[in-house]
Length: 328
Image (cartoon, rainbow, N blue to C red; front, side, top):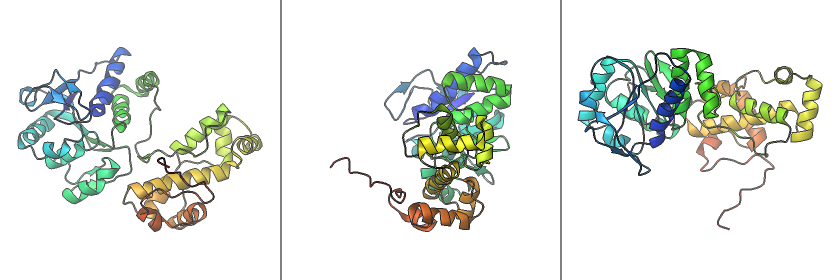
């Protein structure tokens, strides 16, 4: 893997892929991964955090076949996407690469190099509208953690680089090795590509019961799946009656009400973080229709989806205590 870097890159965009691939090698990846950092000048590159990454080679010196070219994102993406020397090398390396990838706003560099025309891509949700406006030939979906379109992979913000890399490892070496890497990284294996970028965490503190806590994590991570009481009970290996008793005891709500609240909050985050229509948000978050989602918003927040999209801050659920001013 050749990681294309530049000044003011996001250091996690380098660390997540390179660290995961190192662990894959330690668990016996065959063939092993060889990771190289490359810059236009071949000199060390300073990240936006001030940490300098040395050991880079000149992009122009990279020759031969490349398995994966990955372009990082970060605060320096703007200048990088207008650096013709960098773009020329990215185009050249793309022709030599089996697959092409980007992390976060690295998508802008690939788009500026003309590598994403007529493709579906993603990027950090906060920059999706700018990407779509700047490159109208590119189809931008701001919601997924990563998207594969042919041999081109694009991922969302920062830590989604880990989800992307686990997917690459699974493609290359199968799910067993990917699980081993995820286990060593102490991370979820692996968040589905179409999971919403903004994680939804339930407001109450985690309950003491491990089964309930695990089910809450599953609900938050998979809002579009079958989360009916029978499905949740089967997942936990208990009866539906026992499941209801546990949720009522530890959360004060039935499983159905917990699932509806989780889906509604996930949908609110997605509405605020993307330009997706309500019908698409409804599908991603497990609602039968846009109208069902509207009713859930009204019941949970007292507002419609359009109003939530215009709000300067996330709305509070009806009956929730107001957020205190930390400076008060």
